[in-house]
Amino acid sequence: MMQLPEQLVERYAVVLEEHGIPDEERPNFVMWLRYYLDFCDKYAVVGPEPLRLRRFLAKLGEKRQPQKRRD
Image (cartoon, rainbow, N blue to C red; front, side):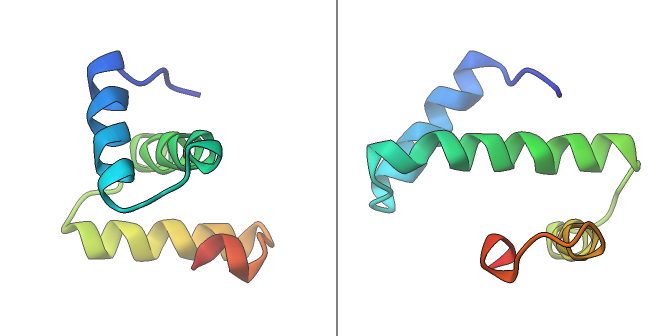
């Protein structure tokens, strides 16, 4: 899995804080960001963000990830 640049992780932490995400949940958000970026890189997913996100969520469905992880 790709390693995220520290500056990106720091900026993401600020966004998570602004959205009220509790500290203990933030590592999961970073993990899913890494999964998403890996997916886009591995499958060369291009296009607008909503399209890439739909493809990622569809892939999670194919891998039988629970719906609560896809919401």
